[in-house]
Length: 264
Image 1 (cartoon, rainbow, N blue to C red):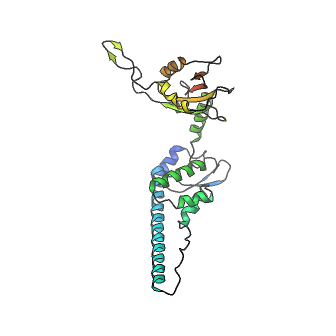
Image 2 (cartoon, one colour):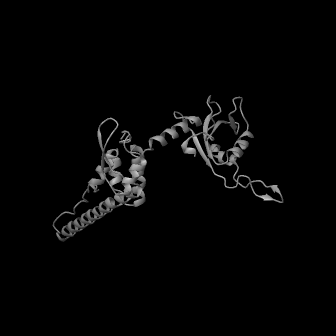
Image 3 (cartoon, one colour):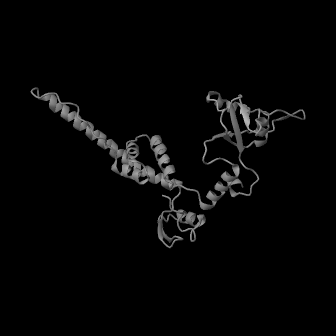
């Protein structure tokens, strides 16, 4: 975790992709700092198949352990009931059973002890994928290619989205931005007014006394109409939107027209 992308001078995306297609799973190459790196070239499907194969074995092992524990408990109860002179045995405290390999795998991904134990006890495939996705996202293993990371960083910087302050993001997608044409005249578009998206502030404590407007990031394919709707809302002297005479909001839109690869 935290390591740079390996062998950037000698391997680019095309070369890694060619190795993946050739099913060359392991490559030893030279990093820019002159250290050698062992790289596994896999795609998402390869990783998924590996994960499913490993966890099928883990689940089978877990089921076998559970069945063995139940069988042992049933045998003890039968032996106890057949001996009338012995006292009734108390319920044995069973230690949690989970695949050790799953626990250690989660630890290597950066999970804490209790997180790894919880992960190793999961049975349902959906729960397993949700948990492992969170661990992988937090680990930093999955990262953008350097040029994509560069463009994303530039895009975020140009959008004025605060990185050290909480903000709300709203996604608005509209299919028919201009509406149908009937009898030679443009008809109004049918869509949910943007004002309806702001009703989430109805149940939020008033922030009118704050000195800083709360940022709201808008991701949309219809920025022109949404800007027009926002312009019709009340404003303060600084141009911030006043919502219900209580909340001060600053709307931030996705930059457009920039020469960034991510927008092409």
